[in-house]
Length: 294
Image (cartoon, rainbow, N blue to C red; front, side):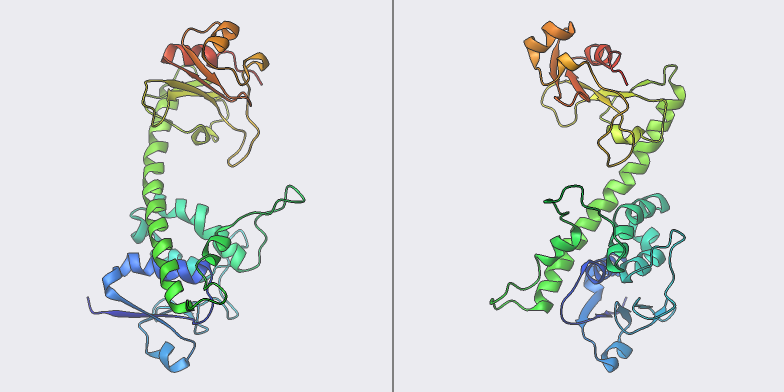
């Protein structure tokens, strides 16, 4: 493939243009792209690709700007940014599957597009606490005031970072689909749906859609000992409310002190918020799971 020129705007930058370029690097190959930052019409017109600049959205012409009138919106009303337009067209190829591409769309593309189009995503939950968003992460790559850094050089550093993150998210997205297939298989095969057992670590949030599941029992991830964990399923994704809790007098206790109270041999730990219990055996974690109550 001949070298492709990708133009995006000069000056400051945000996640949408950074991620749009990073996506094209993954799509075309990093060694097949020359990135040019310019707002000059003649430079844009000569480019093979233009993202977040040029005033056109035309897939056939490889133009992916969103600043002009008439750019499409999603069914949920969130407008596309340059990143979203690129991902809409090439995301499935970049991610390797529709499932992985949809995972990235939901977790990354949608919130980036929303914020770039001034759609509020995060609402303050505390008067003195503000969200630290991906926009803030990308801001750290912008030239430090008073330094010799320049926007073009820092933009490419931000693209390199974003490309690596995107590759990791794609890997997680692909694995997420495989895990969900495994979860569904175990759920359908289980006689008792309220407590599900898995032979390998499964995050409790993976069971949110299964409303009759209360506790997940699985090995503790990345443990240097063969401990097992009983974890209560949350009410919703990215929420702190859980479907049940372990007994109040177990909260925050460990080992012998916990064993004495819960009467479960091999008890290791109960989280102070009472949604995680760790034991040194599957049987111990299962016994604890039966004590979880709404």
